[in-house]
Image (cartoon, rainbow, N blue to C red; front, side):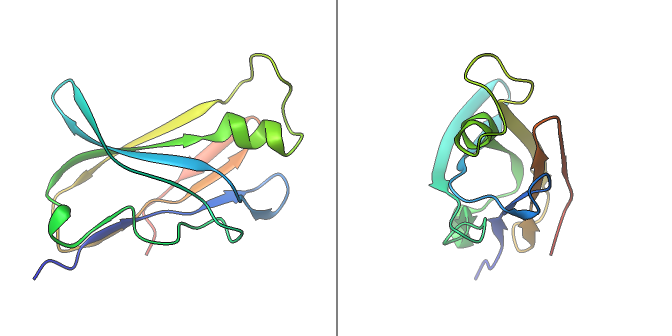
Length: 119
């Protein structure tokens, strides 16, 4: 039985808080094709209420998480209404082993972001 999963969380490093209300979309990438497979919004702790993908639905391959950072930054008063430096943040990553846990956090501020493979 497959136990692998993809999870994420978002931290607002400028405010030193979890980033609540960030829309996240997960895509499966195959060649030039992007297939949307999940969509959620972060909770008050900056986390998703459930894994973005888990179990038998998780297969080896390429995936992309797209974070609606601009909407969050505007909602928290950290960005104006017009064109901003960071809007949508895509993170593309590979899943070589579908039995593993792939935790892909996002740390954001109005002018920078970082990510890593968490646990």
